[in-house]
Length: 310
Picture 1 (cartoon, rainbow, N blue to C red):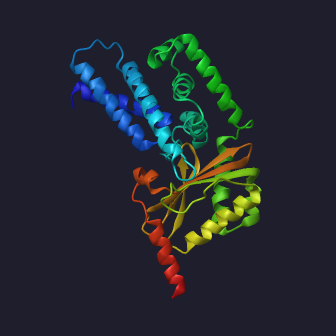
Picture 2 (tube, helix red, strand yellow):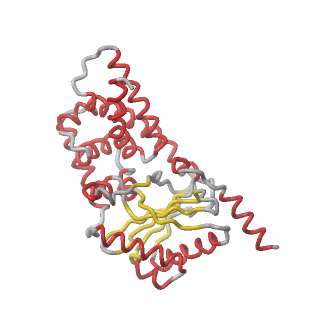
Picture 3 (cartoon, rainbow, N blue to C red):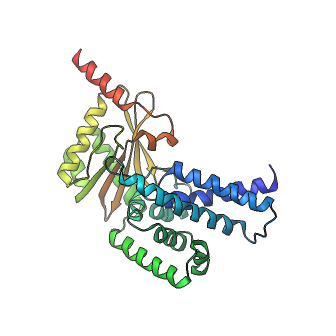
């Protein structure tokens, strides 16, 4: 690999980190990163004076992501049901120092909150609070004055802080709650499950109109617990179906798998104050394809129904 090619590969993870947090979509982020890398390559090959390839790539990536986000929001307004970010599988067990950043800046809870910000607010907040860019650098990246950038960051930060939980949970508590939650779900333990859920817990599903899912969020400890156990009973009718706990976007979650280990869905827990505050269920097959083979859920449900009739 050439020196330039090696440089671009080293920069790719940073570009993806920015683009994914901006867009909440793996596919859209990868498209942005590819275009950004091509532009950086073109500039380097043309002999343009680039003092810092990292800063140049961050600028191009952010501007492309802003444009892509504006376009994506038009599509999301027409989205069937609730829109959730595409999940990422993470594993910070071998790198505890990165865990706080993962759980905070990469969590589905934060990405959902960021959806309510303007594209510029989202970019400024992420560049400042997650990637630690100076306000002068951010001003150059987004093409605004430093005063405007500071105002955008302040407003975005205030909005996000209002939506964040007041009481945080340690990693150990979080992992233990996740373990107990999935054990209760798999054992059909309604009382045990309810004891882990916040009084106002929220369950959100994203099927994108492709597969059956909640059309609107479900709230309340009893309603959510009963819905989860009902889903689990339906899933248990699929031969070999399983729930595999994993880390999703820096937090406890699980893969829902059929008998051939094809993905049915991904669950992600939002834990705060020693309770499970929310659960997000992504079953839209288009949002799971980057994680591996995806099951045909409708076919599985039909086969299950036919087997019960025999």
